[in-house]
Every structure is written in C-alpha cells, then in structure tokens.
Image (cartoon, rainbow over all chains, first blue to last red; front, side):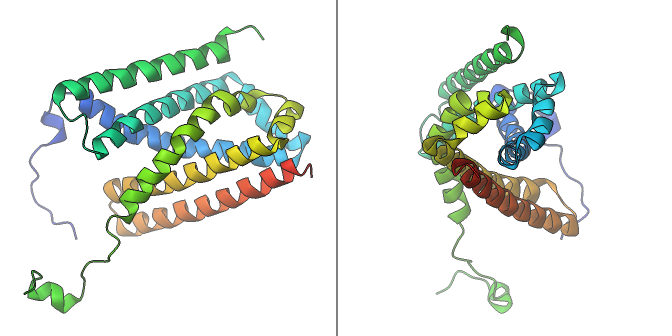
Length: 128
Length: 126
C-alpha cells in the first residue's frame, strides 16, 4: 500500500533529451495504437456486415477529421515500429553506447517523419 | 540454506515461476509484428478509405484475409501486454486498476473473435 511520504523530485528536474522523449513517445504511441485497433475492428466488422454498415465507417474514414486520425495512427505505427526495432536491439545487448543511442534515435525520428509525410501526401495532397 | 526471509516464508508468497513470461511474449509478438505491420502499412491500410466493393474484393483474397487476421490478432495480443504494464504503472486506485485490467482483456477477447469471424465471412463471401 502506498505510504504518504515526501518524494524527491525526479522527472521534473531533468532536461529533456532525445532518449527520454523517444522513450515516453514509445508508450504514448503504443496506447494510441491500441485505441486505433478499435477502428480497425470496426472496419473489419462493417466490411463483413454489408454495404449499409460500411457506409457509416466510410463516412467517418473520409471526413477530414477521420483523415487526421489516420495520419496520427500512421505516425504512431511508423514510430512505434521503428523505435520497437531499436528496443529489440537493446534487448540483445547492442547499441547502448551514447553515440549509438543518439544515432539510432535520430534514425527513428527520420523514418517516422518520412512515413508520416508520405501518408499525409496520400491523405491530403494527391488529387483523387 | 534459503535466501528467503522468515516473513516471506510465513506469507507463502514466493516466485510465481512465470516472471519473464510477459517480457518474452511481448518481444515475440513484437518480432512477429515487424513484417506484418510493414505489410499492413503499405498494402492493407490504403483499403481503409476504399469503396465497399474494392475493400471487400481485396480482403476476400485468402492471403490478404489471412495476413489481416494474423496482423490484428498479434497486434491485439501485443496491445494487451503493453496496456497491462501502462495500467500497472499509472493507475493507482486498486479498484480502478483491476477494473481496467479486466475491461482491457475482455475487450481484446471480443475484438479478436469479431475479427476472425468477420474475415472468415468475408473470404467465404457470406
């Protein structure tokens, strides 16, 4: 059971750095993706249920707010995927040097930014 | 010679023998999700905005249906493991914490069933 006692300040006294920001982003994108799974279940169920039910999903999906949700999920998936690979390398004991964590961290940033831009172009830029 | 202190022995709470199972299954499902997520990102995700007929035709293909079932089941399982840790770490009221853990697992079970049932219907053209 939690005991009421003074805690020394921890998170708030540290300067933000790449490793810590990517670490918390990994959790946040993970939670976002879990919520996004509900949309995918809705898609599959609506697709099986028939055209009328699917029309409801399609209206949401193509609405501009729906496109923004897809964009957020595209970022979350590409980031969580790329950073997840980084975590798997750490799990086998590789890439722990500070310079390596910086390089792998920026690689993750570039990959997820590029993937998000491509999806943004698909969603908003291309003429349909 | 035991390293357990007398209080621990008295309470009878020792190793549950599955301390690393959660960690391992999270990594295994992550490795499985690497190729499946890339497939989903490039091949399947564009169908989310397609017409009913196009999406239905695409996922009626056996391989596409199989891959989508595999991706979604692996993702649901991976999400259950991840959400469990997030809830353990950040939700502090005991009742709320246990309640959320139960809701997540029941929702995941229902979602997995819905996905499998729906995609079987789609591939069979029902």
